[in-house]
Image: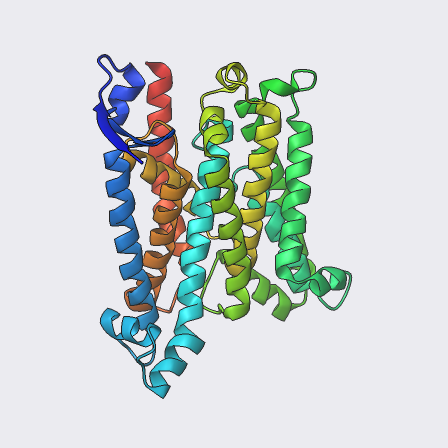
Amino acid sequence: MTVDTRTQNAPEPDRAEKTMGSTSRRIVRVGPSSWIVRPRMVTVAVVGAAITLLLFLLSVGVSDYPMGPFDVARVLLGGGTRIENVVVFDVALPRALVSLLVGFGLGMAGALTQRIARNPLATPDILGITAGASAAAVAAIAFSTSWGAWLADLGIPAAALLGGFATAIAMYILAWPGRRANAGIDPFRLVIIGVGVTWMLQALTTYMLTRARIDDAARAQTWLVGSVSQATWSDVWPSLIAVSIGVTMVIGLSRPIGVLGLGPDIARGLGINAGRMTAVVLVAAVVVTALCVSAAGPIAFVALLAPQIALRLTASPQPTPLASGLIGAMLVLGGDLLCRTVLPGNLPVGIVTAAIGGPFLIYLMITMSRKATV
């Protein structure tokens, strides 16, 4: 087995590549196989993983029995006392794991939808996937003793998954390109339809809240803000399944997903069925988003922020799903830490991400407007 590592530099990168950074990369060959390794992306991934681990340990350590990161690591490795084990494993660890997994899943799902639509605004929040999952989950929470009992019997994860799939199917049918199925879905049409579906489902959710009992409505409203404060081990498993499905698909279909982001014409020229691959990626994004929403509620703007931050840090021409997942995990873990240590009243993490995401959305719109006028 031989390994051949070399650096390639494009002699004349085009304008898009110049704005995104250096095109320097290394090609690693092991026998007949070869991989393209981008040093900057690897550096960002390693640093991001280290920061995520630190935030995770800090999140576990913030409780009524405070511990430092090294103490938390000692307990997780089996060296804690009885009290420390109870505090870490029964109270603090589920919340930190849900924050980590939900943030990673939402960031990864946002990168996938932005790639297939080739639009930075095409996130599960905008496309109606989150709204559909939320509407079904609210029905299961607020009407568990009446007409929504069958959804409650399925459980919130299954109800959210059902709502997300129903919304995605409706949106895909409305955006279907007709006879030109192999050309893929028009990104502009997909976003416009997604915005309309989102507002319709939010109106439906608001109507259900006005018709529910006051205590059920209050519980559903708290969940709708996006919070990990009540996370238990039962909330860990849906988000873990979501991340496992997403990571497996991203790794297994890395080449088709990367080609799909270049546009349907290039994808078709390279032998990729754009319509079929778009459907596969959309299904994966729906599953990941719905399961993450069922665990922590619709935490706003993570799916928008994480891919765009990762895009700028890695100097990549397209959002990278795994790097976006790391940034998403950092956003939710860091936001939850702020809510528990700095901000008053133990606010839900969704308020922090919304406060950050709103100005970033304005910046993104201004940037897109300037590029369109050049």
